[in-house]
Each structure stands twice: as structure tokens, then as C-alpha cells.
Image (cartoon, rainbow, N blue to C red):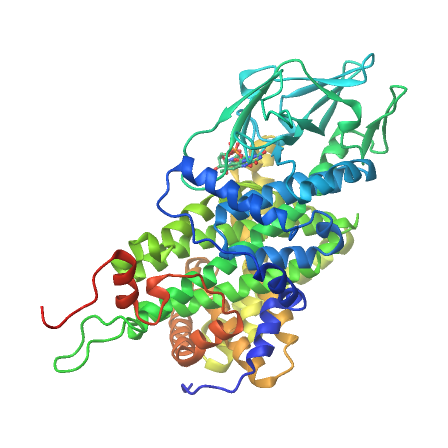
Length: 635
Ligand SMILES: Cc1cc2nc3c(=O)[nH]c(=O)nc-3n(C[C@H](O)[C@H](O)[C@H](O)COP(=O)(O)OP(=O)(O)OC[C@H]3O[C@@H](n4cnc5c(N)ncnc54)[C@H](O)[C@@H]3O)c2cc1C
């Protein structure tokens, strides 16, 4: 492998990286361009931050730049606008996401034309400020068991809403403790003394004129947080609070004027499933945002490493940080990982219509959960690593690592905790496997197992160190598929064994959680690899395709290297082959090093203003930022 700058077409690479967003990105850029960007809200207490966040959000909302209807009519334009708006403080963005997507989007998906007509204009200009009230003190991941109740009063045609226990207090409800006027409230509908399960009701929590909290509602702030301090998260308690019948979001279940409960769904469980599955757009946002922030964080670290010198040989200029393998062999694989996450995001976004197809929705929801959990976890791990790669200067708030880490941290929990999402994915994978097994039978299973055994027990395969083979897509795909299938078989064996020992399904499941997590992770990584192949295939320019293909190879090999333990235990790799893989990783990094930064920058040159370490002269810019007077040699 040699290190020359290959010919690639920047626009072509941009097209592949942005995928379905490519067409919409310029329009979105135009629409948000005229907005004034304030700097990030650093160094503020949480009170100031809440005030400022609200002020900026209201100003921008008045321009009409975001519209709820776009979530249905032009979701890619809506997402592209949010991608452009990441130059706003993340709290302002979070406020928009809660208001437009969680509140507005839920009315869009679970409401009817009636609700859309009444609320959308006011939502678009933020005349009403909305929140999404699902989580309670007692239940977060397990939404099915929330306790808030709405008892239907036939006489007045109203819901009587109550928080019957301390644990039923709504908690963490964004946009609500100070500024919110409405929430979509998730609660159990009690109809004719019968529990009909979880339903969504629009609740007006503050008087629109006086902004006083309405009688029957108590609420307050959830207090200081690790991040998102510009968001006013609330606890809310209801006592005999009344909301009109028509406020029920009635797309899937309604109550007629004559007092009849109507739904086409066979049970409250089915209604719950369909209700929750409509909220998939929220997860989509969580896989779009972090890769964009990672681009900026990596770019700043790279730029700093190309200026900063420490140590070196006597009589020579000190060495640039970027030339230390500890730097470039961390940064370049990180770029490859971000590309793989972008490619999987693109495939998920392209397949979005599947979320509405009855035969495909489960599969779609399962994989989006796996990717969301992976993206959120990776973002936090890599931002911490990047900050240390910039040393003390990385610790300055102006370098934005702390800002990104604090504001992105909640992504690991919100819209589904990673551990829970991985379980949902594994459950889906096992259901799919059972279907396959039923169709193919024992014969199909044995053929598959024998094939896998023959492949991996072949000494040539286990020991082969041929470089062309080690860097081939064929080897990488096989390694990822092997790992996933092996782990699936480990898990199934374990579950069966526990069942045979007399454990219930839930006991066996919980006992196997570590293997369950692993299976979901392996499947998600396989999905990222396959998505990368799909995206790179679309690249028509041969030079660009070859560069992108090498970046994907690096993603695959570093992923395998990170899991050498598994592969060695499964006899998939010999020690010699493992060493050769590490050598191949180093060679790919050396090959990509001269141009990968430029490529990343040119093909998605997102910049944040005023980041000293990300500028062309960090000493000058950091000095200006902290007020060091200009240098004079006369001193
Ligand atoms: C800043 C912030 C803003 C938020 N905004 C909103 C909002 O606007 N509206 C709203 O409704 N909610 C909001 N939430 C709540 C959020 O959606 C929940 O925190 C999230 O759903 C997780 O629920 P939980 O906090 O109850 O965690 P839990 O479900 O209690 O999880 C705690 C831990 O237990 C683990 N765990 C849970 N179940 C299992 C299991 N079966 N197996 C193994 N491990 C398990 C989890 O992995 C996690 O590590 C917000 C939260 C925060 C922090």
C-alpha cells in the first residue's frame, strides 16, 4: 500500500455521505441561512440558559421555518433543516424537537384532521408551546405500566384526570415547567370502569392569557441536570382535572358523542403497540444528530493535531501530534466509524416508508432502535476520547467537547434506553429466526451449521494472512455474519437450557441479558456494514468509490479487531491472522492519512463558529478568546 492522494470527486462523496438528504440539504440551507445564529450558550447558569433558550426558539419559530406538516409531507426537508440548525445551541434544537416532533408529531400521527386543523398553525408559530408527557416517576422504559388515569365522564363528555399514586407523577416532561401551554398526556383510559390501556390526550396546562397553571394541575421543575439545562423539564400531578372528549387523540380509538368507545384494534395491548410504533420519527432524529456533531468534534481534533507539536528529535522541529500512531490510528478509524453510522442512517431514512407497512414495521422499528442505541453510546465514548487527544486545550469549554458530551449524554436514555432497545431488537431477531426455522426445518438448519463449520474449521481459512483476502469485503462480511449467527446460536442454546431447568421465559430471558445485548450489537454492526456496502455501491465515480470502499474496510477491520476475543474463542481466527489484521489496519490508516481529513471536510464541511482549537491558528484564537493581549517582542 502506498500513500498518494487518489483522485476522487468531492461532490460525489458528498452525495453518497448525505444520501437521501443530498437533494434537500441545499434548500434547507437556504431556508435557515437568514436566521441569526447566537453562539452556544456556554458558561450560563440554568436559569439564564432556560430564558435565553426560550427567547431564541421563539424568535426563530416566528419565521415559520419549521412546520409540523413537513414531518408528514417532506420529512427529509424537515430533517435536513434540523441538520443545518445544529449551529444553534443544542438546547434550542431540543426545544424544537420536543415541541414540533414529540408534541406536534404525536398529534400528527395519533390525532385526526380535527386536531390537525385546530393545533397546527399555533404549533408552527409556537403560539402554544408543547410537551410530551409520557414518563412518570415510577415508569420510564416500561410505558405500558404508567399509572395516570383519565376516567370518562358520560354526563359532561369530559375526561377526569388523576395521578392516583406518588409514582404516577409525570416526570422529566420537557418544555413544561416554565413555558409550556399544552402537553400530549399519556394515561390509562378508564371507560365504563374498564381499563382500556394507554391513550394520548391533549391537555392545556396553562391559561393562554395569564399563563397561570390551570386548577387541578400542580407542576414544578425537575431541578439541575447534567445537560439540557436550557430545557424546562417538569414534574406534573393531576387532581380531578377535566379535559374535553375531543381532546382524545382518536386516530386509533375514539369516543362518540353518544358515549360509545370505538376501536378497530382487538385489545389494549394491540392499541398500545400501534400507538408507540407511530412515534418512530423521534428515534430517527436521534440517529441524525450525533454523527453531525461527531464530524465537528473529529474535525477540530484533527485540525489541532495538524498544528500542535510536542516532543521530537533533537535539532529538529517537534513532532506534530497527528504523526503519532496513537493519534492517527484512533482518529482515522473513528472517521470510518462515523461514515458507517452515516451510511446506516441513510439506509434507515430511505426505508422510512416501511415504518408504515404492517408487514415491515416491526423489523424497521427494531433496527432503528439498535442503531439509535449504538449511535448514542458511540458519540459519548468518542467525544471523551477526542477531548483527551487535545490535552488541556480540549478541556476548555470553548473547545466544545464538554458542551457536546453534556448535551448528547441524554441521547443514551431519551427516546428509549439503549439496553432496553437492544432487547427489543433481539426479541425481533429471535422471532424472525423462529419463522425461518419453521420454514426451512431441521434440514435447512443443519445445512447452514455445516456450511459455517466447514468454512471456519478449514485451517486455510483460520490461518490465512493473505492481505488481499484480509482486506476483501468477502472476508469482512463473512466475519460479521459469522459473529452474529454464532452469537444467536449461543443465546438460543442458553435460553433452551434455562427453560429445561424449569425457569420461566422471563427468568431465562433476564438471566441471558448479556448475551441478548451482544446479539443486538452484532446485528446492528452487521447492518452498518451492509448499509455501507449499499451506499458505496451507489457511487458512480471509480476513484471516489475506491476511497469510500477503503474507509468501509477500515470500519470492518477495526470492528473485528475490537472483538478479537470473541473471534479467537470461536476459533474463527488464528493468532497470526489476528496480528495480520492489526497490520492491515495500520496500513489502511497510513494510506488514508494524507487526504482523509480534507475529504471529510470538503464533503460535509460543517463548522461551528469560534472554536479556537478548530481554527487555523489556535494560539492566536485562544489568546483572543481568553483576553491575552497581543504579543509584543519589546516586553
Ligand atoms: C433530560 C431528560 C429529558 C426527558 N424528556 C422527556 C419528555 O419530554 N417526556 C417524557 O415522557 N420523558 C422524558 N424523559 C424520560 C426518558 O424518556 C426516560 O428517562 C427513559 O425512557 C428511560 O426511562 P427511565 O428513566 O425510567 O429509566 P429506567 O427504565 O428505570 O432504566 C434505568 C436503568 O435500568 C435499566 N433497565 C430498565 N429496564 C430493564 C430491563 N428490562 N432489563 C435490563 N435493564 C433494564 C436501563 O437500561 C437503565 O440502565 C426525559 C429524560 C431526561 C433525562
